[in-house]
Image (cartoon, rainbow, N blue to C red; front, side, top):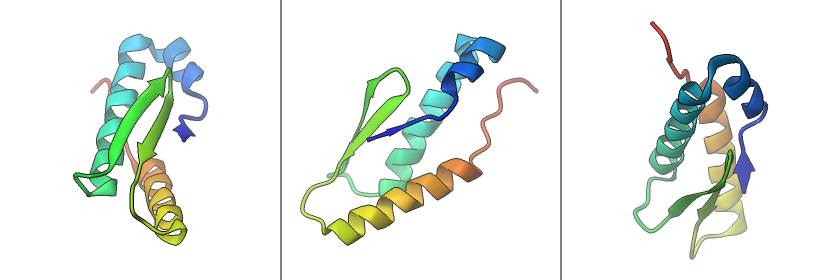
Length: 81
């Protein structure tokens, strides 16, 4: 499970269209970083996501979670030019 920290601030200050762009961007990032067709990313609700990963060790899953976090921290989402 994961969520977007301070997501309400994005919606409140930039509007729901900007928030939707952030959600779509994170969804694509999770899919890209997981890299396996068998992994199932899903939006649980609001700004919460999960990633179902089968047949992997706890170590691999921890590494994958860290990769998602690192990638998300580096992600730039452009809303207005």
